[in-house]
Image (cartoon, rainbow, N blue to C red; front, top):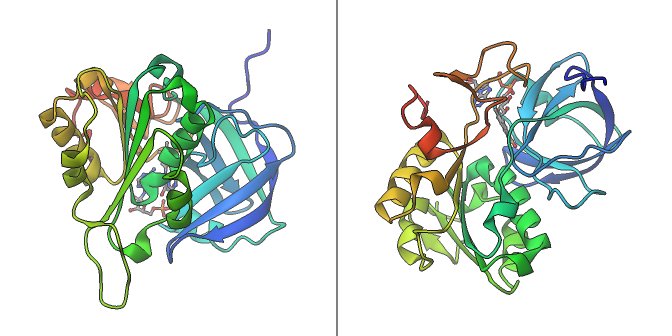
Length: 275
Ligand SMILES: Cc1cc2nc3c(=O)[nH]c(=O)nc-3n(C[C@H](O)[C@H](O)[C@H](O)COP(=O)(O)OP(=O)(O)OC[C@H]3O[C@@H](n4cnc5c(N)ncnc54)[C@H](O)[C@@H]3O)c2cc1C
């Protein structure tokens, strides 16, 4: 039996672009062959002659005819991704890494905290849960950004909040003059005070910048959530995506192949997890 070749790249065409904020855009891509992933897994996405980087699809795992990535301009590769036009080609490798165990959460209240571009993987998770909403007790989605201008998926959030059993609360750190905002103004962690689900049994997912991952986890623990129920997406710098290059080593784990999704109890004693 042949093992899957982790270096094999599938060609894909950019079919749609949405500018979500000055630094973040969503690309819809159409691969030449089906790219099947579980929510939480990531792909290595390449721009020909430029380079590649790891990105988690922001579309749902059950939406087989739609594959989207939401990408923040951070440096060399992402700068080029932001120059792509509809019709341009990109490459895809993967999927790699662990998934959110959404079928273990049937019957439960699910809590999601997504901040900044960390809303991309959590959008994929949210859409995958909503696809089979009858299987969950409720979904609470806390979304955060620095300012209203940085908040992505704003119009979608309004629509998602109308879905039965879904409760979305959004917050920004501040509202600069000239920007409008009709939701909360506070750190995303403060929104946990508004969450009424039972913390003992509920899974809680955190994805965002390192500082949010750290204080999100601390606050979840303070609110009574269990270490083994807190799911963190550890977006360490990585290249190969499957445990060869060692760039993403976290103590005894590789973020790429043992994660990127880990439960907090598994990694809490490893060094520098919040960096
Ligand atoms: C599993 C995983 C999933 C990811 N999903 C997304 C996503 O859905 N959307 C998105 O916008 N970004 C995502 N990222 C981060 C993204 O991979 C990096 O921002 C991107 O690779 C940077 O490449 P660059 O060449 O543009 O930047 P570079 O020029 O290489 O670096 C620019 C800056 O970004 C930092 N950086 C580089 N790689 C990473 C990284 N992996 N994590 C954090 N900082 C980094 C560098 O240290 C430097 O400060 C994900 C990362 C991982 C590991």
